[in-house]
Length: 200
Image 1 (cartoon, one colour):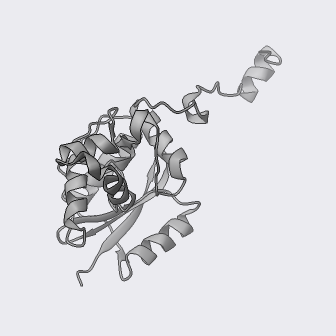
Image 2 (image 1 turned 90 degrees about the vertical axis):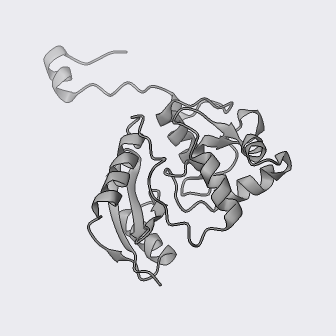
């Protein structure tokens, strides 16, 4: 078995993790409830992985993920992935998903059509539900028919998927969520002292 390294890193949505080996990125971990939970899940998914500073190619991938989650148009399509343990059909699905740019979406059926068989929509959803490369293989950009969100297997479920789509400016046919409503920051205490109580 190839030795794997991993590191945790901060993003706009929380602390994520990335695992790599000699052939490329092995997996990406979206935020858990705490850093301890994220580290524990990484070690369950990748037993024997050791926490280490990322090599330059992994650092570039990590920086790209951070930029994308800050709303920048970061292209992750060239990031090397280690797909040795990924089934062939899943690889094909992931290749199609990697062509979807930030802010755009496809349906499970559209991905299936691009694979040459519209009847594979359910299998596409199952493959994306097992995607170990979240964000780099942007499974969050694949929706159910009619622009509905569909499922999402990462921590936070469809709420996380909606948040990722919102960051990228993608449109869905779901009802607005907390992440879609612009929030006015509370007045600073110094404003209240200087100007009196703030009224709305």
